[in-house]
Length: 125
Image 1 (cartoon, rainbow, N blue to C red):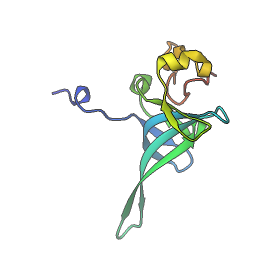
Image 2 (image 1 turned 135 degrees about the horizontal axis):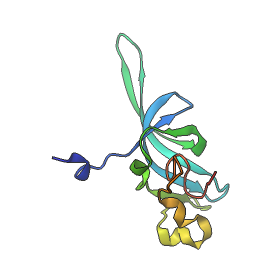
Image 3 (image 1 turned 90 degrees about the vertical axis):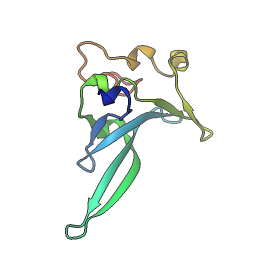
Image 4 (image 1 turned 90 degrees about the horizontal axis):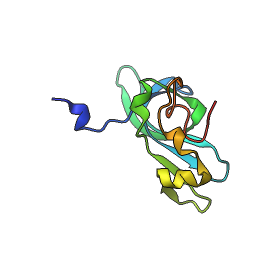
């Protein structure tokens, strides 16, 4: 049984600020600044004798996450936009083609190690 075709699991990233792995749930672009941020869930464990676990949902600047899987794993990570009025909108290829980001940047590009991954759409190095 190929569970990956039945169950959706977000790709893993390394959170450089806390030195811990997490799951990349989406990218969000802030309209005010134009910056991309990663939406990540990770588990913080504190204590040794009686460990305490916390599930944390955070946003991190794009440069604060590093890939832990092949680029193909990040292809379908949702892209969102935080609008000036505080609303959040899901971006589609059609909306991205209006100039907010380049649709070609949503796909893996041969020769680009992290295409569509730690380099969010709209940011090319």
